[in-house]
Image (tube, rainbow, N blue to C red; front, side, top):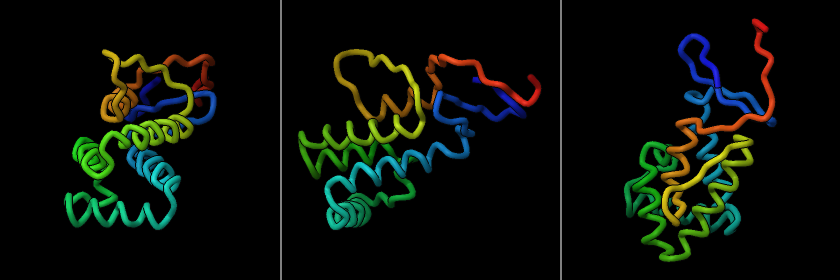
Length: 132
């Protein structure tokens, strides 16, 4: 991790992105992909239900992540954990290498996203920057 002009960059073996500019979009893409595993019709129905019943629009999921998780739990019950895990898997594919050790036995999407934002990373390679 390094800072250039006060912007925080995160990196892995796969990519180099500006976290503050792209993370919300990466998270939304991961949510889309996870919900798409249920089928496009189901995905659209879930987004509709989230908006009408829980007042959570798709584009506001990153800023209302805890409310989103609670809504998914109300909709799917215990099955919501499977969706959370799918979102984490798709997000990990997008951001690359990331080491996260949850406190306690339960891994939650909210904790995982918070950890990603804190950049608890273990890079295995050094990056070449423009100045090196």
